[in-house]
Image (cartoon, rainbow, N blue to C red; front, side, top):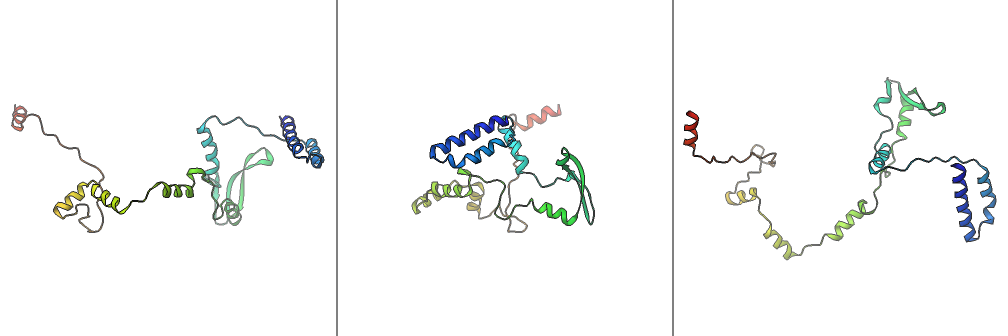
Length: 203
């Protein structure tokens, strides 16, 4: 795999340099690259969108160290589990002073103005803001007046207009607004008269 990738990659570079007439100036560099051993890491392609999100989520929504890796925290030192990549990535306890631990932890904090995820295209914040300004037409004075007249009146507005009493205002503090959290089902009247139901129940 490494030799095949190296051959195809350098061959494409040589063909590109030959087209612009600069191949002779890079012969020695290309030959040096041919003589060096290459390490190629290749993984299977992502299966589906769920796999892609799961893979990217490990890098975009994780912290520098999880609570599961912390073994001991004292007034002066912090002990946690870390992988020793010099020894086949074996998990070993590491003990650091509090200052050194904070120093390493702060290296994972992004500077001001840097973000982990940047959106582009129509999802970019500036683009979305410009699109909203572009596609929302401004109403003229006549249109605003007509839209105000044709606006459907809510039940609260209807009661306030008829009675002058605002039932949406908090009766205790007189400043807050009441919010509907649920509605009781409407009780349907029985199909049979009440006295017939009572007689049937008593019998």
